[in-house]
Image (tube, rainbow, N blue to C red):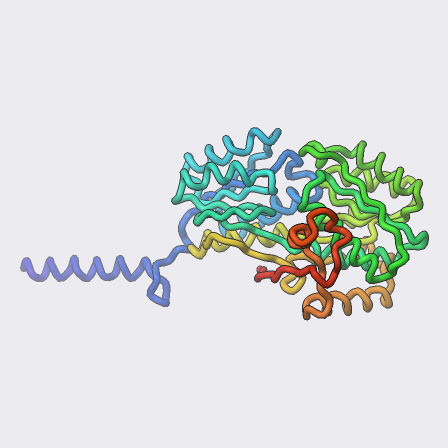
Length: 362
């Protein structure tokens, strides 16, 4: 009798273990409840740009995978570290932080919570439990610069960056090269909204800079300034000129006045990072996203299709294919600056190199 009872419990135990495995025999991880924290910068989830894209990707992942999502909109730079610490102490499985300005805080917090996974957008953090999500902005900027170079009627275009930092200069260099590839005679005017994080939230400054550039002849302005872009968009609408959006597809913001947007698929990068965490596949290290895998691209939709002719689009797609194949080498500002520290924008093109992008799929 005792042997029969023992045999019964053995069968129950085997059944219980088997039920916790997938068909392939490995533990089922997709059913576990995952808690994800998203720390945005002061631009917030409604900046129509960088933060909005991250929030979109996280929100879609929350719906698709049933995760618990907590979003923190930081009022200033001093709030990043406490936000990361709070999420980690409360047992969140994955903490995603948006922007290079959060690099130093994450370097302090991540080593203290080795069982927590972290991801940072636009910064390279070499810590085992941190995934660095890095985009080839120079490739996408080359494409929209090429479009501007083909489309300009005044032979003068503008570039307005947010904070004057190397990341945004990477956009500028790619844009300049794209403009020159279309027409070497086109002039590029460049300005920045500031040198602090306030530069991302100053539409008044954005409009002031845009009006000044228009006064100097610019008829197309590439705006890479977060929420400050709104001021640029207002200016081109007032003066009947064109702007180019960035990060998210901003064509809808001012229909007919946004020539295109240089999309940086932060939404997909965030979505896929959460998906990997949910499925137990999270791995730290660098993840690169470029044109080849649609990590960056230009936007075409109902809001701007009348601004881009079929002939122009054919040329753009040909250039895009050549960049992906490596026939056109787009300069990476980070590497160019190392080669020519005193004058990176005037560095000999033959000495510049470009980075290799990784995978991005949904």
